[in-house]
Amino acid sequence: MAFVDRKNAKIYWNSLGAGEPVVLIMGLGCSSAMWFRIAPHLARSYRVILLDNRGCGQTRAGAALVHRVPVMAGDVAAVLDAAGEASAHVIGFSMGGMIAQQFAVDYPARLRSLTLIGTHPGSPWAIQAAGPVLRLLFNKAHMSAEESLRQMRPHTYGPRTSDSLFEEDALVRLANAPAARDYLAQLYGLIYWSVYHRLPTIKTSTLIMHGGQDALIPPENGRLIASRIPKASLIELPAASHWLMTDASADCLAAIKHHLRANHMLTREGNL
Image (tube, rainbow, N blue to C red):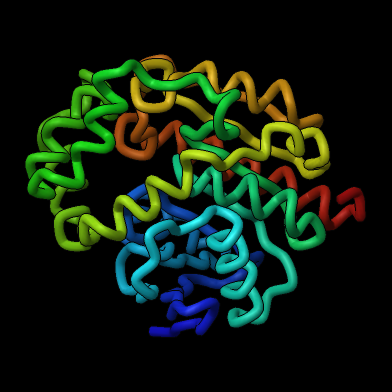
């Protein structure tokens, strides 16, 4: 167990495996434990570095009203320093994808490759979810953790995803559920955040994945990001919703591995 002291917070991080470093950044209200379907597989070939964002898991932050995305991107850089890594492949999901985009534009020399899963480039350019889904996102803070997960399920999981898979995710999330204050502090940090205008400055090879049935962050957002990053490739999984790693875990993992292998080869050849 390791912590980094930064800006009135103790950022929890750990690592699995050995090899080229891969940083995994989780989404809104979720601890790094939610990478359980991806991290162990990647750790067979890579050093997987996980961290809990401010407001989640074992990270302890001060009583902030807002956890800002640029600050959380700086937390990622601080974790890399603590891990002794000058650069890494960075993978971000949902809010974690927003942090990853911010990291890419703020720390370009520290980026080996970028993977963005189910995310958007920030307001006002992001394509928003329908009104009832957005209201639910805010109302979750006033529900029990279990009820909020069940209310969100139709908007974030594909209809073919089994109850057993959903329950596996729910158990991990319930064991690491944030306080309402911290959940809202993360959510408020996304409201006025954007890197839309800076996306063309990202020169690193980027994989974008999105679920075709994502009602929380509609798939048009993945297409928008892909159109803005010069070296981006887009994969849409038509039967998946927001939680790609659960709805289509094999396809998601295969795409990530292919992207990492391709950029490992480029790095060895001196082309990155």
